[in-house]
Length: 238
Image (cartoon, rainbow, N blue to C red):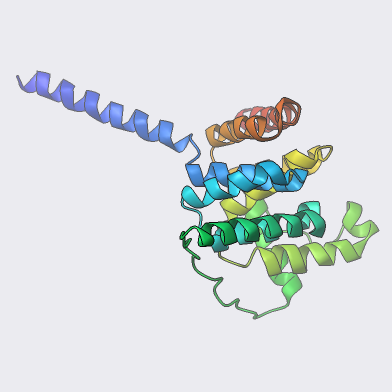
């Protein structure tokens, strides 16, 4: 009897472990909506964006989380797309309010600790994201155009990434969605898919990401993203 009970307990524990691993490889509804909202905004598909914004709110994203994502993506697809996304979101909120729906605004960003130079703060955050300290000597495009290196570190990785309305993982979901949507930026997509793994997204979740991209913006963009992801995972597994 004791042996039978022990076998049952082990079986149950293995089942629980298996379910937990499966759940870790799935995106939750909020993550899925971050992807679709970001990709459709980057594409400028406002007609399909509108119901996805509603779905995002109903999935549990707060008003401030969606706004933050729409602001974040301007760094990757420009002010026009970002502003049109924000304007569409304003319309959605107005319509819902007129129908008696008061959406959860969510919390505001915490005050930023501005000790040290903004450049060094951004450089440190970039090092955290990539998992490697950033070199003091510029190279490549940063050496060719040092101004863009300054903008990236001071504005993107300090001004934007320091805001804690979204987690690093959520910001990376926004980023890889936008880069996948605009296309022809494989080196950047490779870099940010790698960062996504560094900040806690799993290979399984990134496979799910590709599926959501396919549903949102089509097979061609999803296929391109899948090729880059396969290359990264193959390298990490070797």
